[in-house]
Image (cartoon, rainbow, N blue to C red; front, side, top):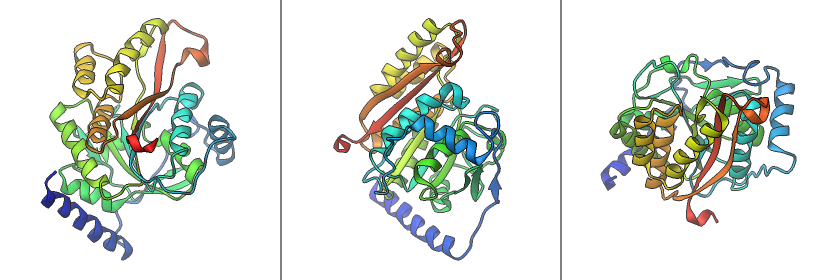
Amino acid sequence: MVKEQRNAIKTRLARSRRADTIGEMKTGTRLPVVAGTFYPGERAALTEVVCALLGEDVDRSCAPLGMPCGLIAPHAGYPYSGPTAAAGYRAIAGLGRPELVVLLGANHTGFGGPVVLDDHETWRTPLGDVPVAGDVVDALVDAGIPVDGAPFVREHSLEVQLPFLQILWGAAFRVVPICVQLADRVALAAAGDAIAAVLREIPAALVVASSDFTHYEPDESARRTDHEALDAILALDANRFLDLCVGRRLTICGAGAIATLMRAANELGMTTTKLAHYSTSAEATGDRSSVVGYAAVLFLREDHG
């Protein structure tokens, strides 16, 4: 992005932060819709489950991240995908605490445009409320990503990420919820560029692409297909990944979110990738005849170590 555009974003962020301090608000709280189904609906039970998934030795560092990083994490019910999601969040926790989390969710309903921002002020889980970063939302609107609350009403893919973040870092972070369809690759690249431009001004940031992988195939077939897609992801080859998704009609529900993260990762120098964990639902159910695949993938700067 050219210098003038970067300066415009920096100015917009500063102006929006000032506006936030004098009480400009949006549309209230987005209430949880899958508490009690995908994850426990009571605070104590949810805390116990997430802490058990993360493990007693997880790093809950109070030191902020020194540079942006990225994560692909699954969003099925915690008994199925929770261990894989937890492996990804444990790895991120070892690097530091994000002050901003950009949540790139799937769009399971098809409502709204290809890439859209949420319009709520906070998101709630049984663990409490998480504030939305209104200044960052405004900067992304200026960069061309519209606001449309419709896709978020019943969308679970972003909500299920929040308890992991809350258990790790309490109320010390803000979020930017974005729903992403498997859209034209130009639109996905533009969204990734816009996110990268904003995050150049906010280094302590984490970008999470929420996605499950292959759905309802035999375990052996799902693993083979998923690792082919993961090869493209780990190579940061978004075009190859999207070609696979479209040409082979892969059932990776957050493919658009993953491609957007890959573009932002390239733009921000997060070119070191690592598969932190892979599993299928068979590991929870024992049924290998029809499974869903789950992956946790890290995107890091080389100097993260």
